[in-house]
Length: 77
Image 1 (cartoon, rainbow, N blue to C red):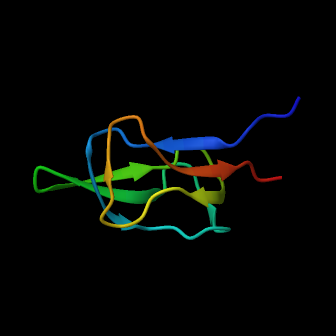
Image 2 (image 1 turned 135 degrees about the vertical axis):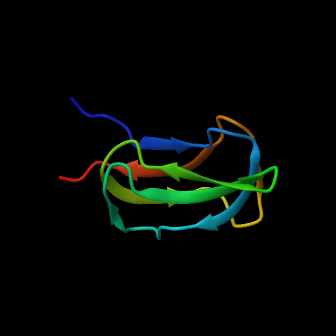
C-alpha cells in the first residue's frame, strides 16, 4: 500500500523566520525543520516522522497561517 508524502504544517499563524533543513536532506522524527516567529516569539516546527525533505513550500520572511503546509517529507526506504 503506497502512502503519500508526510506534510509538515504550521501550528500557529506567523512568519517563517528560518528554514533549518534543505531539500533532499534526511531528517529524524522530532527534528526542527522550520522556525516560525509570532508575537516576537520563536516557535520551532518539528518533523512528525523521519523522512527525506521532498519539497520546501515556503520562503524565509513569508507569512503563514495555522495549518499551512510548510514542507513535505518522503518516507525513507
